[in-house]
Amino acid sequence: MKKLVYTLALIFVSQIILAQTTTTYTSFSIPVSSKSRTTGGGVVTHNTSGTISSIKGSPYLDEFFLPGTIELSDGEIIENIPIRYNVNQDVIEIDNDGEILAINKPDKIRKVSYNDRVFIYNPYLIKDSKNKNAYFEEIRIGEATIYLKRTNPLKLETHNSNFGKSGTGASYYQMGLHFYVKGNNDEVYKLNKSNFLDHLSSHKSEMKKYIKTRRIKFDNEGDVKKLFKQYAKINH
Image (tube, rainbow, N blue to C red; front, side, top):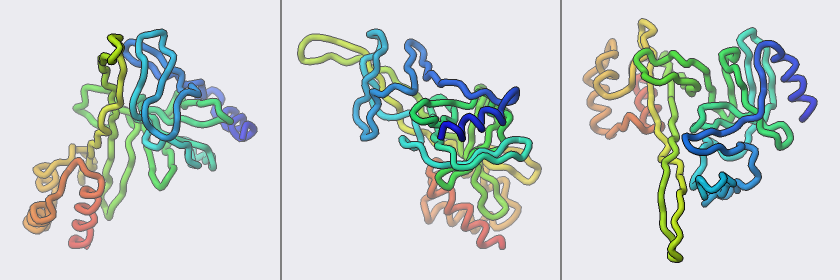
């Protein structure tokens, strides 16, 4: 495994730097490689110099590293890399025999694939966004290209114990799903009922009825996929 990552680092020389990741929050810093995290959920305790006593939940899309593929912008493909996506920090992490690394210059990457998902890096995909975005999952259904942006903010909490001691904890908030779609003129628009129907070139009444009868939710991954599969079916 080390040989593989060293080879990866050599390929990335002067283009992409792999560096040990530090997960940084507003008031404290936690090494991602901390051994205190358990994989079974529950409370995860970190040494944070007394600022934060514990964190509930996980910042990751998948807690475990899974084998994946990285395709560089020059067409080079590196396979069988242990990958996971840190949604809170919006970074792709790599496991190098227990040392957690992150790609510092993802703009040199065309796509990252793992667990039947494809991620692209495009900080300017959403034109009117106030924040600089990074990774989107790219979903293709029929002729439609859908971009899924996940968010997983950390929420600080103050709690009191039965022994009169108080402390500050934190928990990862509910995973947010935000969908965007590439239109016919390559415009990327936020997916909601109104925008979806406005951008249809045909079958508007049928799709409007489908949304109503199936009670489609535009922040639900399964519903969104069903919606576009239905449109691809009737528009074939």
